[in-house]
Image 1 (tube, one colour):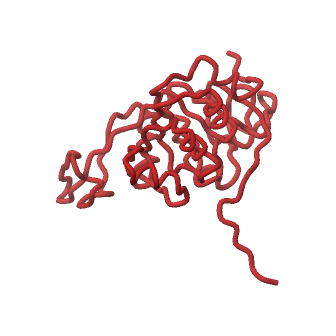
Image 2: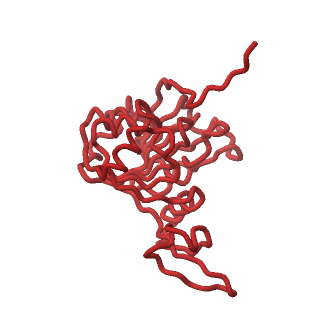
Length: 231
């Protein structure tokens, strides 16, 4: 199977449609699939639902799709760095399903493992638990959360071989592995593609069985919050 594509537009060819559900990796601006997000913007695909820890910032990450009103709903855990996100949500233009970070990651992982639902104590007694099934185990109350099954996963890695085995660098190994698992098709953008067999099997973070298409590209690597000391 050919997995290596020339660019983000080619990798997305035949996959995009209005109203689709996309799982995106990354945390803040670290490890986000910025090239694929730009290609989705350029394609004009609309009424999208995104499962992502956050929505980037106003002019980068998923934020560029919010600017063009291509996103209908977000499943997220942190939204504090995006003014347009907050504006659309508070005005009723954007649907939002809040998830605790660990719950969101586990929902993605569960979907990738074929698990339709699981019980967790996180969120019991809060708005998170409203409308969800409650069950007691050993005298403790849990709520049921559903696994995420997305139409498409888009992720960012550091290095991949031609079969899709993937290595993430440092903090970018955040939501990317579980996001990759839960999509019917997963596209990974990476900084380097190396020949098959050149990666140490013990160093691989995501097996190639989860990755269907790969692109290599140049990445901006923005810093979300820059803090410096005075001289």
